[in-house]
Image (cartoon, rainbow, N blue to C red; front, side, top):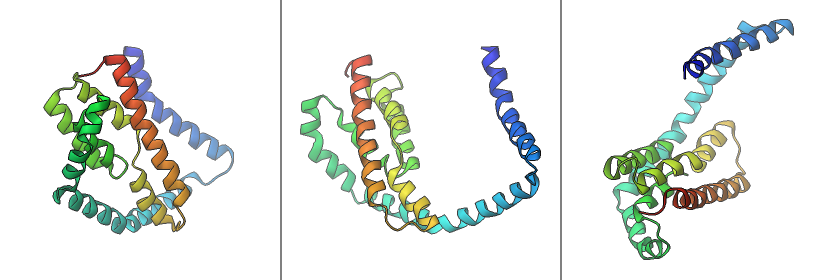
Length: 178
């Protein structure tokens, strides 16, 4: 355990040192390059604010309107037939949209059902097995000016669906059902 702690403590400084040494050896002006990267990072951060605000407002409206609960109610009979807890659906819907909203749902599920419950374990695995597809497309693609994102959207949503499905199957196989 001590070895892992020591390695974790020193790993990032060592990687940074290797990058700096390599850059210096290749005669790259490392400090100036770092400062230029910082300037560009700030410009990108400022340029994504409108996309981020739009996404957060849309998520808030979706949750506050009751549309999420209505959708879960429609799916409940089908989910129960397959042994999938309906409580997990908000996470499955929100995870591709927003990491923060999904983390809030995951925290609520774990606080309500416990971290060692089927729902708590499923929420944890699902949180780690999927990505924020719409967030990535909206914020990052928008920030760099990519307009045609149809194929990326399809692949991202397919990957999210596979992650959600795999989470349900693996957690059920390893831990059993509720």
